[in-house]
Image (cartoon, rainbow, N blue to C red):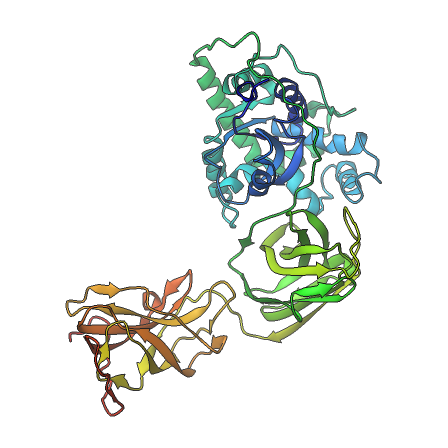
Length: 558
């Protein structure tokens, strides 16, 4: 056997639940070998590639996309099934193929949903049976909150990027297309795997149950109808390609261990802002020591039922431990808008190694759930064990939490930046590339609090302009604020650092704040302070505190 006979392509089989994915995986594994095709996995897109891309040629998984698009190095394949038929197959697969103790929590939710003809729908069940196709494919493009129409358009845009997509109801044709892509003979049939033991057909369920499933899958039904039209049009015009009678690939079947995968990535809703995330003490701890994670965040709205989840990942990205505030002690109910501080305390009964803590914030209401924010690998820490011991799998950690409101201020991305930045004095001249301090007063004339968040801090900065008004240096040196927020009507006095241009000349210095990754303040109503400077070749610098600062409004003549 030579390596030229081993399939070395890059393929991701995006296996959607109850679309014969395990049967397709079985066929591909028999043709290419267990060393080329992963077992059936579940995980986030990038994490799957990171964890398995170097070890396998073909990744087969229930893939969770988090808005990062498809990887251009890979070919993508997937198959879809009529939405109501798929939903029934999944529901009765849970009920008929499992016992309640095998799927604790989920089995009971599905039973309640089926017995109530779909009226008793728990938020934790919605993602499995309400428009899973549109949600799944739209997440390839983005995971930010947006309208159903935009999600539908994004889902279509995403699936058009797949190298092969097909229909469960047209499985032979789909398998032929996959065979063409990989270079295999098309199978006459594939064996049935993981089949639902018993279930009613769509036309056999009650009218009320049918109406409820139809209501929950309006987008997916339209999405599937649209794809069926495209499929019919495409395959009436397709060119028949001769497939090989025998595979040119030799199955590669080494022995290896498999490891589970965990979550990655971040999502943030505009009504939520994370202000800080810390671990008490230092990041090196001993087994059995108490860990305290403290999170400060700001809400722009009142939240009826707030759930905060904690996820610990090990150094290989595997999920070690996860819990949330609802079952631990009490749910966080009626959390009002403003800034809050939440802390998690837990006992670090963990194997020795490096870990990261991630957090997910979710709003629940009677109708649905909204992911406010998700942060993975937010806090890093390392566990040391005086006497090394081996440990594998999941652990059960004692944990408690505490939440207290810190003030009524809502902090987020600034919208109204009416105000000024006034210098108190000016250097008579500076030399090229000199770094100097400038005393300034920042005044907030808006009706809005200007507040820094963890990922969008407000800093003082500047632009250098030549005498013709052309920008010479746009990204000036940043000076952080020592205060988290500046209230309406408040004046903040500080010193900011400035670096002179590298060429002697006469310049204008435009002083203004910037909220990182959001906007420069002059785009939302701010009036910058403008000074004129003589930038000289290396020589003496004269500071004249009596020189009156020449303040020019934006666009004023020199």
